Length: 134
Image (cartoon, rainbow, N blue to C red; front, side):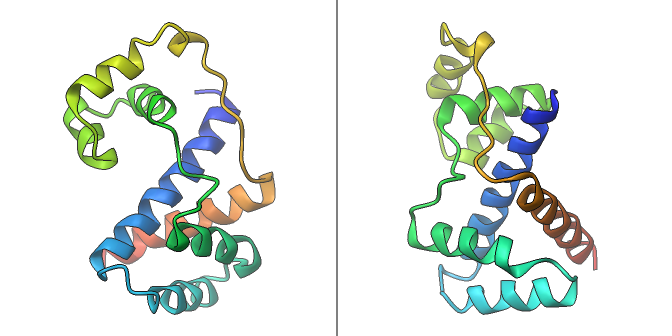
């Protein structure tokens, strides 16, 4: 993966992680406070994370991946088809249409956030992984 693709992948993983947390807590907005506390505990810059979390909660997230983008990046990350279908709640035909789209091989990835934000998102994801292992 290119550096740009890797950074975009971090944004997508963050989006999916927040969605999973929201689903686990029945989309209760109190989760916003929990994420803020998590940022405080692990010294993650809240000013970079909070606006993105708020947009995800409101359903207006700029980092939400498109289907083609998500399928292509997951294929590059060696995710199985079944894993991708579960992650993005799509059907098998949608997956294959996405990775076989005429422009799929030349798809360009645009980073939605800046490099500093991606660094903070990566820190958040790494801390979340550690927290899951407890």
